[in-house]
Image (cartoon, rainbow, N blue to C red; front, side):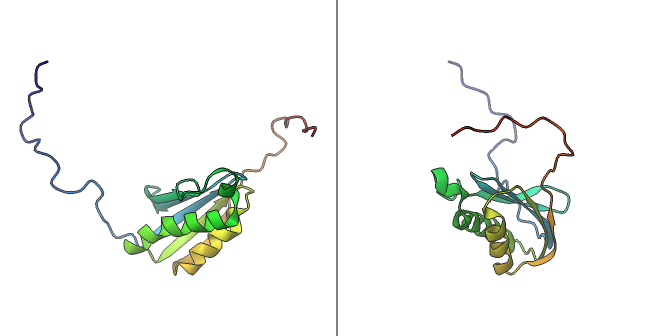
Length: 136
């Protein structure tokens, strides 16, 4: 096989890919389903700065839907953002899961000042027909 000819000026990356920028204000999105809780931290324009979920924190199976798993996921996502200088945040909570309150409690404990907390759970105005009821 022929060797690839390196392009001129491509001598590897000198600086790291993630540039550490100061983010004074951001938006924290919490998606709490019955099986998992995902916490995403973005800047005001919507670019993702940090994220974490109960699954990435090492919880497996039914333990991912617990409040403790949601609390751990929220703490992991926010730890990286506090180092970048975030002081204020808006919180958007979506979903019916058990981790809603626990994740919000973990955010409050982190020291970030919350400007508002909004529930953005999608509610149908009698849209699609729901699936038939389970028979157990």
